[in-house]
Image (tube, rainbow, N blue to C red; front, side, top):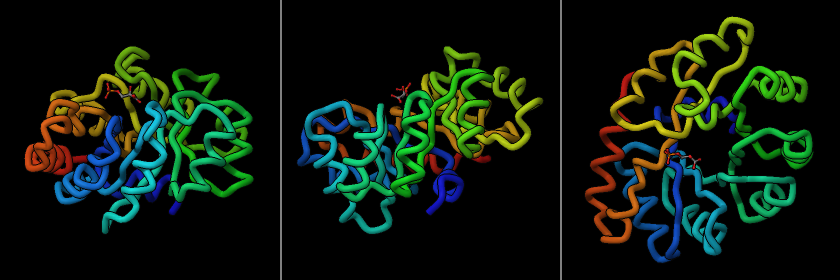
Amino acid sequence: MKARELMDLAPVIPVIVVNDVSTAIPLAEALVAGGLPVLEVTLRTPVAMDAMRAMQSVKGAVVGVGTALNGNDLKAAKEAGAKFAVSPGFTEELGSTATDIGLPLLPGIANSADIMRAHAQGFNELKFFPASQAGGPSMLKALGGPFVDAVFCPTGGVSLNNAHDYLSLPNVICVGGSWVAPKDKIDAGDWAGVEAVAREAANLPR
Ligand code: 3PG
């Protein structure tokens, strides 16, 4: 699956932090049942890679990693079965490694220079991060002027309340956010609650 196909699957990509690997499967089941099949497991906790691996057994889930910081992260993710990777920023090393190993990468960008460097390596599907701090919807509207081929997944400060401001832009395909995998509900094992939050997000128009 190419990056664009992943972005088309649902309006929201959950940004997931897993602290306890036993929560990985029920969490993934709840998100998929709610209509969010693309799952970004951030490489921020010691159990992240195991959690990402476990989630692959959930029917319908398309599981990848987030917070990929370098080529080694991409190689380890690919080895562990990741279908895609997301990075907070763009480096040439990330771009060339992703291309070499055939792992779809959604690299982070925050300005025109980032977009131009990513573009030079063939990346047009980009994560706009941190979206609200880097200029929000009006920044994406402005970037749409010169960068007609670039499409974005804004992430960072996105919520149910402001997702529409992004999703209504022609160069936004989906948004990313942690609000659909809330820590309190995960800690409480409230999978019905997670599913309900996911369903609201999955129904966002775009
Ligand atoms: C990320 O961790 O990639 C994003 O910062 C998630 O941002 P959010 O917690 O504001 O959704």
